[in-house]
Image (cartoon, rainbow, N blue to C red):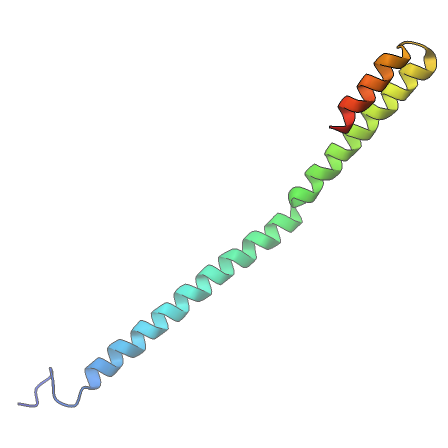
Length: 88
């Protein structure tokens, strides 16, 4: 009765081995994908670039507000209100 199925159980060992190799390959592919996404995110600036642009725009608006107040284009109340709104 020692045909291809049964017998010494060698076939079961091969199935386990191939299953483990498949899982290892899947883990490697997922890890590589995460790594590639991080590298590409850093290369294109990621979210850091958005914050610096927002900060630069905010600073420009503050400077414009100060300049308008200094030239007398707006009142003190308008200046203070604009300053509060820009801080939010």
